Length: 175
Image 1 (cartoon, rainbow, N blue to C red):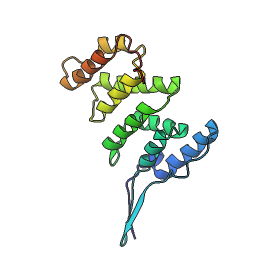
Image 2: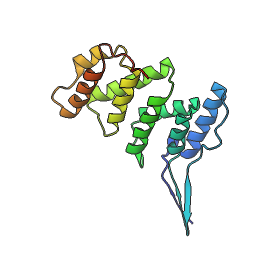
Image 3: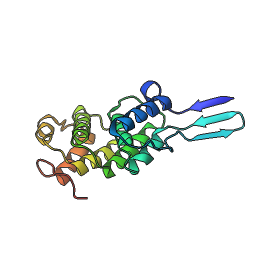
Image 4: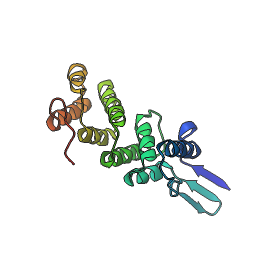
């Protein structure tokens, strides 16, 4: 039997994500989501195991606080993943609709602003910038103004987006 596991390795393996999920759920005091498993498909002698992050993203949509914590960790991760672009975009989209704690909001702000200032604007950054628009920039606007690479057209696209949709300092969007 051949197994094609599309989950990450180390802390992003399906087992590690499930272990962290159980730990966070216990810490927060929430019930475990029984649907939190990677999707599997078997055809002949080949089994495909798809990323568990699909299930985590769905649970974020159901307001699972433990999955929200994992989702924030996921967008903070620099490691590359199979299907990473779509998974990270979908994670940011789900987090945009989630209720985040003040500490989680600040972690997202810091991650996204630091990526922008470093000139790291992958395709999923479009969803990251929408998430930032939703939660607001807090006190990060002066840092952006001073440190932005004005010669990088990709960075400037998102700088202009944030300038257009966020007042100084950026206030969270109305939901």
